[in-house]
Image (cartoon, rainbow, N blue to C red; front, side, top):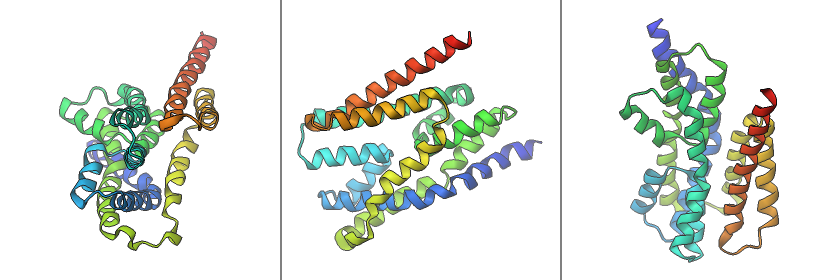
Amino acid sequence: MTSRSSRSPFWLGFSESLPFVFVVTPFALLFGVVSSEAGLDLLQTFMFSLTVFAGASQFTALQLMTDQLPTLIVIVTALAVNLRMAMYSAALTPYLGQAPVWKRVFIAYFIVDQSYALSAIRFEERADWELSDRIGYFFGTMVLIYPIWMATTVVGALLGTAIPEWLGLDFAVPLCFLAIIGPTLRTPAHIAAAVTSIVMALLLFWLPYSLGLLVAAVAAMMVGARVELWQAEART
């Protein structure tokens, strides 16, 4: 039983993360290319991915920096894009919150869209798993994705503009998030938040400094939380 608990969930997480390789690879490659085009050197690009490790936030910050927007706007917008990580953390706390502090540090660092989406679904399905099983599964989802992200970012930065535009690497950005979001839209709260974010982002595209995204993100969280509260009240 101990052997199964410590190894099987880890490799299950590893195997279930494999499909994301096909979208994370061009996603990271594109970030490396865009960073190079924006004037970042290899070390800066690598450290950007190492310290932030959040693709959407990295692209957002880089785009705003390229547009030479005020530093405060860049920081606030990037943080707003990454607010979902705080929600991911809160959602996973009941399953991983009892882990030792040093493990929680690494868990916090590796909470990204892929690890959360996979873990949230699997933890809910496997109520029989012990803490060690859940920790093993979580890290299993990242053991391949993380080094691929870092390595491919470097490759993209090295290649720079040598990658032809006709390859259309930018397809990976929406495809990655569609692959993540699709399986999670299973409750009215999730669907309401997703629809709100889409509608608000489209309606507020005219706001300067891409503030429409910030407003849309906050509105989506509020609507999702409100719908979830209504559901909870209806069940009681």
